[in-house]
Length: 169
Image (cartoon, rainbow, N blue to C red; front, side):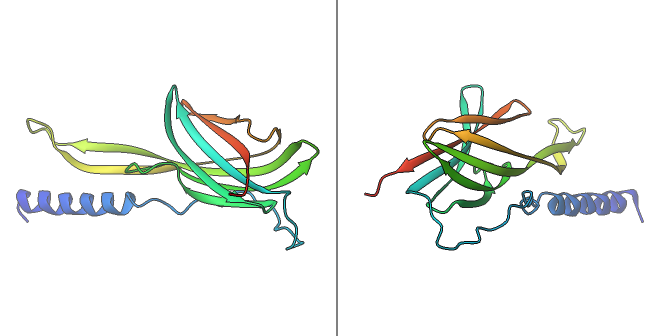
């Protein structure tokens, strides 16, 4: 094979590899909580659960769900960027007087993207490499309904949880 042919084969292989690496992994299953045994169990009303991410004063995105079930499970991207942080939140909400106890597990994946550039002027990206870094945490919070709690800080991003009661419309 000629040097040009070898270069073309290498370029195609690296593009195929980058394409395969750019697909996000499925969300991390959060550490397991058992499903609510009493299917009729319900909270005293509907609550909106919101996980949001901020970096400094900039809101990066949020993941939100409305439910009256004491069992909560939600997963998805935090925003609509090319490589959004993927979250899975799994937990149980218990009403304790005026407080809510939230036993939770949070799993998330963060994309680390690097590019290889040509030596041409101007430089052109030859391939992108994406590595997904997986993280997980578990805990319990006693929460006042409507108050936001900074539950996690990672890589300069603060992740907050809030449970807000919603009145029937």
